[in-house]
Length: 189
Length: 388
Image (tube, rainbow over all chains, first blue to last red; front, side, top):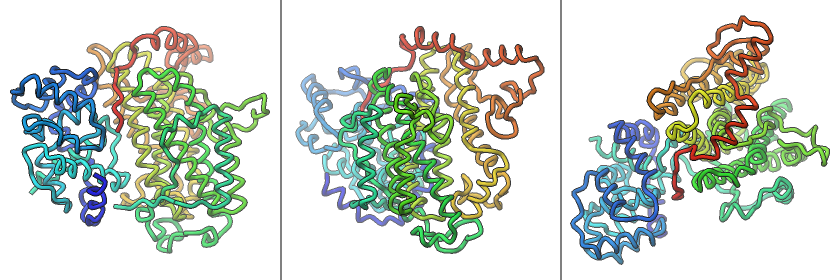
């Protein structure tokens, strides 16, 4: 993780400027595209609390619009234990999961996001947004600890490099702020 | 886009000040172990500060990096004064608020308040560093005084006459409703002041502001979201909350200073302190009404924010609003005049006025009710701390 972060420091900082100038607008375009959903997102932040259970995962699945999980009880237990054990910014613990548990990076990253708030939700548009900034992370369907790790570390780096006008007074974790802005940015041609 | 420099070595002047700071922490009862691994870094964002003076009579000349480059003593004095006032508010807010940690409604609120107090102290360090490093003996003396004044002046130590510089930083913050109001209204004023200094002709001051502004956004968010969570929970009636909003609006407005301020005008002429939207504005500054203009931006922002805060109220409850900028003012043209919360002149007699104030501002009975009735129940929406 640390090595990845050092690697990211070589990015072209001039290229970040146009993005940072538009973070508030981009965030609103993505996060507030549907006001009800923005409201529901906040509800989720409040509603998820320990102890985590199947219900917790169901709530996140429903909010994200995922198909119901088709996991056996062992897989579910494994993921719940993983969610208790992992500490931001570690992503290498993902490697210890069985294939089924890490078969969907969007699902696993959404669990991480709503339970820890510090991890970012994997979103293909956000990944493309990072690519526009010169941070190229290969696409993935499965939760690859290195690709997802680079993605989370990149968003963490943006938090560090952003000028003050990019920081909104908003009731969302800053990871969400930048991830949502990146999604809107990546979606633009 | 910028890179933040973190200062690695301190001057002897500042190191001596740090020892005094540790004594200050002990004196006010702030346990340093609460800071965990937080460290008070001195941060400068030189890129955002810019190289050229952006407004005023020195516009177009290189920004001043050192005291001796500042062309006149009165400009140096104005800079010292700005830095001193800013630093004074940072330590004052910690003095006012740290006792609340014991009664936090949730772990989330306790951690949020603690983070705010850590960052306020860091901001105070930053201002003390600027004073000690760039302004010689005069600066060192002013930096020491940041720790000598006290918002809760202790008569046993003969501190009654050593109040904090700005009035609202001497008022007690007795409970968490006032804490959320303080962070929403008064820290928001702080954001405006920091933004106005971020374009300063004195480069170390301008470069201090970027990192401070980033941190300040969390403080404002904590205040606004705290108020919103109270509204959402719905235990405290909106009409009751409105009285506290009324109390804090005028306090926040007064912090922008007098109308037609000559000191604001001089600060602008020197390029020391700009308008809130100095870099974005395309019109020349109205130098005689600088405080009024900044206050206007602040007032508009308060109104916009209150719409958001009020949104999750229960069905049938009235909307929270921002009272008129004429109501209950202690500074400026409206000071000493009687206006109601809607800005209409009050027509009644003295008794009628006092009764009216009791109906729109918190009374002792309201305070008692708040503390003994509301704050003992589930008065704010729960939120779990997850860290960020």
